[in-house]
Image 1 (cartoon, rainbow, N blue to C red):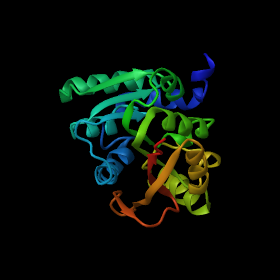
Image 2 (spheres, rainbow, N blue to C red):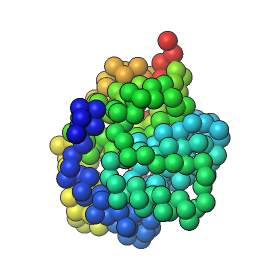
Image 3 (cartoon, helix red, strand yellow):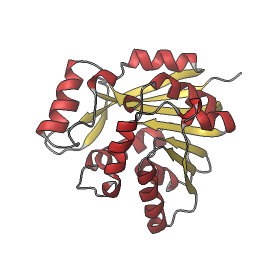
Image 4 (tube, rainbow, N blue to C red):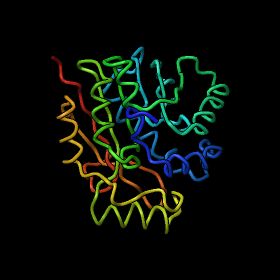
Length: 238
């Protein structure tokens, strides 16, 4: 493994590879992402013109977000290092018939070397809390985005409330996620994310909380970022 692709946790990759066949089961282990995705798409759609945009989805997994972006007429590339998940993504693409979508097994840092400043929109959702060096991913996002491009991150805040709801609640009480999905120590405060982003040449646009309704298991956008949150940034112009 070379230095450009070293920012991975083998256990995390194995975890998602083991779930690969269930990515598109909206009632299975990935139902959390299926329920969250319409809200994430609303946030993105309201802030970035998707039709005709060259879009990169980092940590695409089985392609839930990538396909949603492609349905908005964006030209989408999804990248991930979980090979089995990418296989599922490609198979589901055949069923969907989306021709404006492709998948690659490559690290964000490596892609940033070979295709810098190539994308109008970069999304990195629910990935940063699963890698050893999230700041490196943020830096790569800044390198991959064209001047003025839109960059979106979503992750989980690091505080007691997030631990109680995102780990104990979502994984152990409600069963919305497989147990062991998250490591609380890897959760990221908004101030930390903003600091990494500024160093990567990204300027904060706005943000919102992704608020879970425990009764329905669905999500809504809200002003509170105490647990799950999504952020819109722009690549600074020269």
